[in-house]
Amino acid sequence: MESEAKRSYRMGARAAAMEATRARILEAAVALWARRWYDDVTLQHIADEAGVSVQTIVNHFDSKDGLADAIADRLASQTEVARQAPTGDVPAIVAVLFEDYEGHGDANVLWIAQVDRVPAIARAAAHARGQHRAWLERVFADRLPARGPAREHALTLHYAATDVYLWKLWRRDLGLSREDAERAMCDLLTSIDPRKRNYE
Image (cartoon, rainbow, N blue to C red; front, side, top):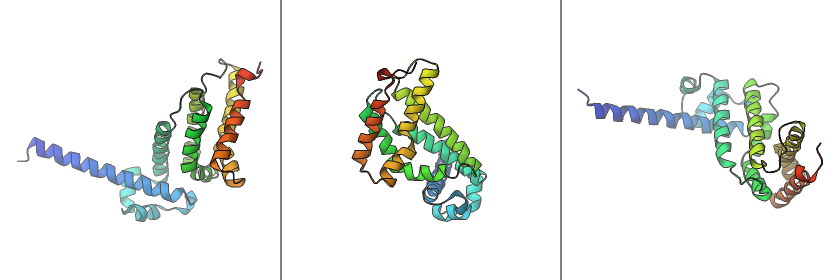
């Protein structure tokens, strides 16, 4: 008869193997969707990239949209961890944001372009917008007005000044160096500081 310790070890090893397979599938899908349109990537492509069967993907995520939702959750958690910045320190805030955008900005722009036709991406984008807004409220807590129209206006300006499309404009479309683009964002954020403007 199998001992309790042996059974526990076997179950633990099985759970670890399943989690490793799940992570491999997620990484494969992220890699493919970072450079190709959502509709152009099939479950078979992801299975081949991850070294698993399509059925294994279905067992873990139910469907392609289920996999996309899981990726959105995973990236949201990673973003939360990566975007740690001291409140009110504009250069540090911008540096942290650029570190994220330099690694994931191109993929983000590609996904955003598909929001209107892929429900899973629309859900992910809506969550990302809420997450970015919450981050802005946290890192700029020292400068934002109290609750009300003035705060909403200030948040709108800060959102525009830190949006991934502005990063794309500077880094990809205009070809600015990262240093120059970071300096531009710092200047923009400094210029819209509510403490220096009248929002009433």
